[in-house]
Image 1 (cartoon, rainbow, N blue to C red):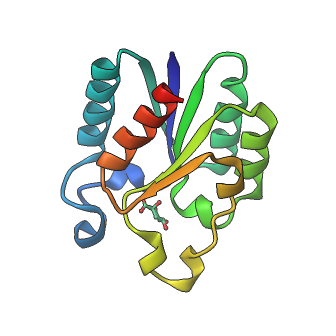
Image 2 (image 1 turned 135 degrees about the vertical axis):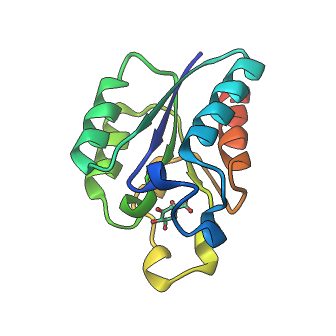
Image 3 (image 1 turned 90 degrees about the horizontal axis):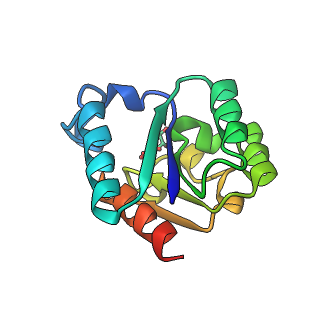
Length: 141
Ligand code: DQA
């Protein structure tokens, strides 16, 4: 099984950005966590991060016919991007939405997720563990 893990803008700044919200672990720590989880589950995981909406759209399109599942933390694009929603709907690959923080307890502008209707599940507020739960869900599905 091949899983694509996509992280959106500013997630490369983990460890530096708002550690009170996102924790002190770095983006490198997150990649290592996802790679270990993939190894434990016996799946292949490609981990991708971009600060650019169009690059994320292209990455999703390239997953068509190649990947069996997508885990996506679109970061700020969660709350703005019809383009990422349309890309996920286009490829129709089973997808899980993840957020490190619990966005339901944050600002009003974070209460809308454009991508959610293209996702089978959402895990939020669990930190790195949310990525593990998302990958386990895709494996069991
Ligand atoms: C986030 C939540 C978003 O609202 C925010 O813009 C992010 C990260 C999270 O993982 O908690 O960049 O997706």
